[in-house]
Image 1 (cartoon, rainbow, N blue to C red):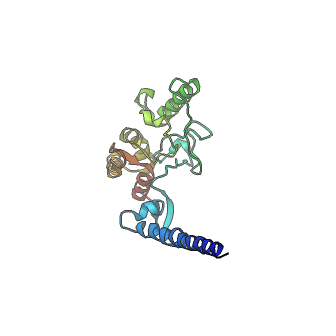
Image 2: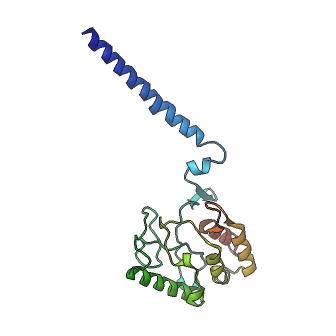
Image 3: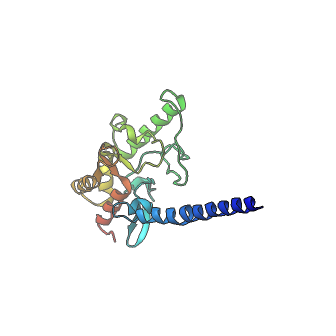
Length: 203
């Protein structure tokens, strides 16, 4: 009986210690580390706000949909393998790749259709469309595009926002960084916010 009491007490002490350590101390430590300057935005989901309102995350790409496709004022992200149509917006609540190889007939067909659609939208030859404009990322929610893809969209965005191409190019450069693997890329959400806050008539 005495041995049973000792074992029970030892078990209770372990439960109490683990509850305090893993249920209180560890979560509080993680929360405190997340408040260290430079880490806070990542801990909070890298939420981007404008005029006090959350407008998205700098780490999740959401392709904007133009009210009038014939007068599209937005920069666009890379396509998503999970969208319902070739260039349709992705669902930010889901993530994934197509898992199709480069010689898969369906993937080749989809890439060709994307290239033709983007070439038509940007009024260029299909050969001028860069690879990242027609290939989905592994997650399907890549927040950034290549500088080449951003440059391709400058004339259309300038025309439909009333800004000069030089001004839009300045905004592209201001939102270009080597974050991640060090390859220059342009964050689409931040760039669109910058363009539309600069455009004539923007509030």
